[in-house]
Image (tube, rainbow, N blue to C red; front, side, top):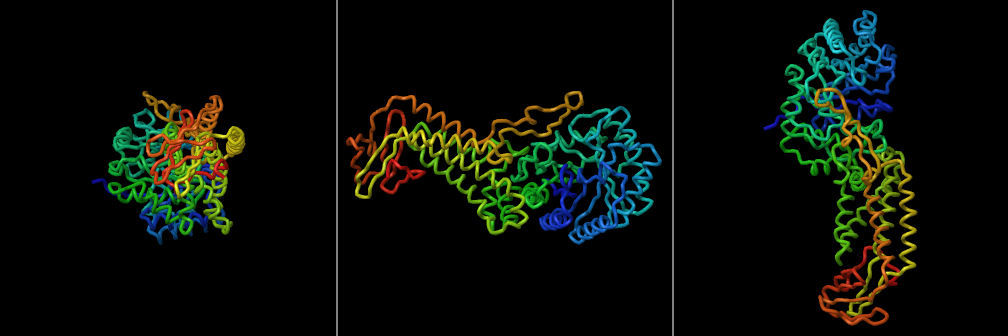
Length: 538
């Protein structure tokens, strides 16, 4: 049975505005309550973490780190501090080594026991691994001279893949065995990570188990237009036996990140029992609280990302169901399902209308707004589709009325669909799938050199809204190019007489189907309603 991951937590390691101290405190407490036990400070856009790494933190900043370390300890969480000097450090320079230790000393005094030396996202070159291993070994000795129990972790320059390289061979040869080495999986944002992947990486590092830096739900860089609100997935339960820890890199939005982090905690604590859907439901309830239903609606629109292709979004599957039903008479239920999905997304924004200062609502607002506009385009497309079908209404006494499509009304709905779609395409934030997305899918080529997996990196034309709008307009175009046809009605399978005004009789009927040319609509009894109010039946 796969074991719980020994070290499981969060690494704030994204590019972009770092979280506030209060946000870090809240996230540490939230994930600790769910069984996580680690947090690492590593925001790439803190100048003193990377660009100006030699510059000391001032007294107030050190006090913040002390508070974080104490807060983490109270919640059974190991607190780590990462420094990223690789941009310009001279690895063998005594001056730079002294600067490195001088930078870390106040943090060690403030209670930091775990140091992460981050040498990622810099150019590789011959001999680099040897120099990095030397620096790491020196730093471990220097840390031990200051305190008896330091933990040191290295983020190497080559941190993706499953194949051996000369860099990894040189690094493994010079690193002390006590130093953890981080790895992000087969690529930067790995859709799937298997136990065999971790074993292969360990083999490339002389059988050193990796510490997985898991880039989910992170949304920095080219991913900033998306929220990754779906559950943790794509990791084999057996993976947990092959890694010494897993640290999830969160989104720029600390409160919204808690949805995915809560599901990751469930997996990392009990991988063999993990149910993504059930975990996701619990996470949304915990994060959304009284607004959980609204959060669920937005999360369903923003559940795709590196771990879930957008074709698996609920909206895309509902569009598929409608397209599949479009050639038969039973299209209304399929349309009602997607109508309700879009309506719920629009209602979600209203849930925060009386709480403008709620931090989760503030983070979600750009996507709540995008979902409203995108959903309106989807609803306009659905209304247009309905206008291309014949419709009918049956009174309780059995008198019915059927009508075919109305050219002018259908044209007006076509204009409405185009205008709404145009507004949706101007939105920056992604909801219901991306029109274009880019993920940093750096991989190892067969010979170990780095490359970009274009199939993983580039996602285009995956908007459920675009797909639905195209379908609606194509259907309208096909209908408009056909000659008008006679209206036909079938009552429980038998042809019924239809008056010039569309009147027919269907007392006690269970199923009525009204047809015009190849198009048909099923009306199940007197209580049946169309997905949308229809002026033809007014």
